[in-house]
Image 1 (tube, rainbow, N blue to C red):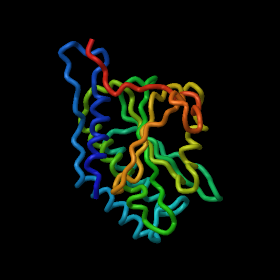
Image 2: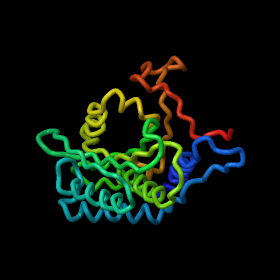
Image 3: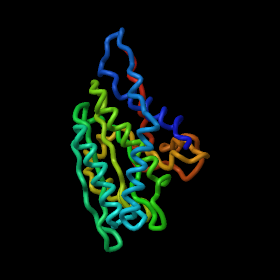
Image 4: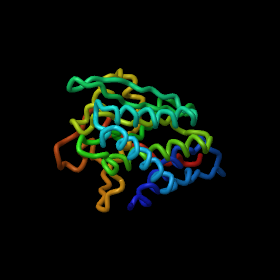
Length: 231
């Protein structure tokens, strides 16, 4: 499974979040927690076991999906996160988004890291998107364990019903007030990171290159600095 490079990117991201606000000139930026592939594989095996015990999948509205949410929520609760299991209905079935906030950091400057947790109905969804879900879980656990000062507030999300058209994440955004939306500085999404042919994308939200489908919604053109310069 070729996740090492993508896990290194996740680790670097967490390191950028650990720089103290207004650091002294001698401050050294944290490299962030080490992200062990073996631990990610353990999370994947747990998701596979959940699917096997629940009809072979973890799709929207199924017992397998609900058990997946509960499994990850339990680990995050134990690590000190403030979690919310937020229900929504789609196609006559109840689905859930799992939102996990790490206490600390400036909530007016929130960085979100997300992945969809649901599978299709024809399989356990271990690559799509067990890999992204498991890697984000391991990053969240290591970030909590590091117990360092956060520059930004950090929120993790595991979305439901993505396979049916980005339903869970859309419902989450639609449920935010304008103030809550403005507090989100950046969102990083990780999907199928076990694939042998990965893609790394940064959307041109302000259409500055004049190509593609044009500018995105309000806020898409914002630039988020991954490092805080020493003063």
